[in-house]
Length: 169
Image 1 (cartoon, rainbow, N blue to C red):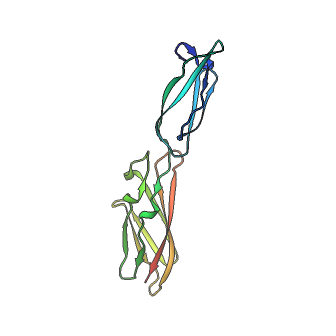
Image 2: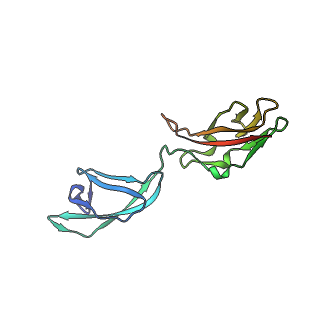
Image 3: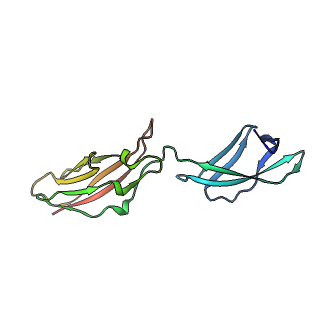
């Protein structure tokens, strides 16, 4: 409610040169509103100055900690190798090392799949992998398969997806 005995309503936000925050405002005499840049979290500081009796006082630095809350998982799209399968040799792909989520442990990320007409994908929650198989014997070509990573953020899980071209030889 107060800093250096001045109520917050007497304070103003100095110009801040902060690459992590989109805006900092003071609302009423109770709230300092800090809006971080999208997907940023961590520690930073801002500077406040009191205008007490129209006399600016020394600035006060305030440490701000932004914690991630319901940030979506992020699939590392460059971590996916080319997927080449044949009817006699399925392809198994580990998934844990291909996704990050700042507020959900990797073990709690769930994976869904969208198979295609000629390629089937099975996602195993036990060993956290995807297995690609040919659905139609004798077919060859390239088809897109989608993998979707979801976190446990409630009430609405956040997702990221990757479309993988699968070559059948």
